[in-house]
Image 1 (spheres, helix red, strand yellow):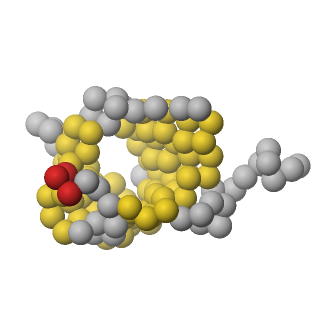
Image 2 (cartoon, rainbow, N blue to C red):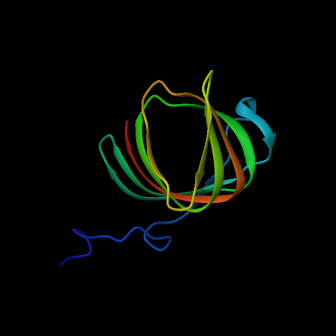
Length: 115
């Protein structure tokens, strides 16, 4: 099978891109994101994302599936309960979600986003 039609999700599958959350959304720390965006097809994105410790506000206008591969984070919806996510956890965040993401231990996830 051609590499163009079958791809593993790995840190070697795409060039890493580093970024940070917008300064006005940072609640604590200085989190640094590294993203390996392996697939981009129209409004569909898929790859790996990693963040160092910190806390920031999140606003989801897109649908996202995540699986935590490493680390420990807390995702809290505005007015809702804090959810601890750790290695092995899978979840979906739907459009309209507002809250915070706090990385307690450097977290690596794979993701599929439909914008």
